[in-house]
Length: 169
Image (spheres, rainbow, N blue to C red):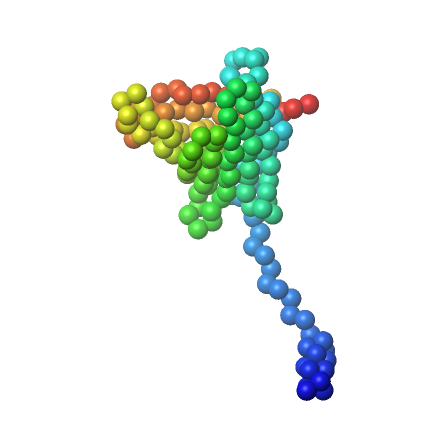
């Protein structure tokens, strides 16, 4: 019995190791289309010098996802996880805030910006609100996050929020 076990162990040790298959890489223009948002940020309403939040945006999961940690000065924080899906050719984001529930956004790169859309909350009439967020890298290195809302499934839009993310020094 011992001889058979030793023979198997020696045979396994002598066999050439088969390298594992290479891991898929999350590289290239599609996977990197949202990298301009990665950083440590101070967040301001557009046109104001009154900071309302800090936000940490980092590449995670071997570079295959972008995680936001939203830290507002008032109210509850939250986190998002965004990733490019080569199967659909689009970007997907999951937002979980400090209240129950989650929001799914879908979209992708449009003319150098990232545009993500999903249903988030309800309007005054109780209709589900479609929210469109457009993230744009500005010339000064800041990132603008401009949100619009629609109570009629995207036929008409109104301003919802407008933030500027400035790099922490």
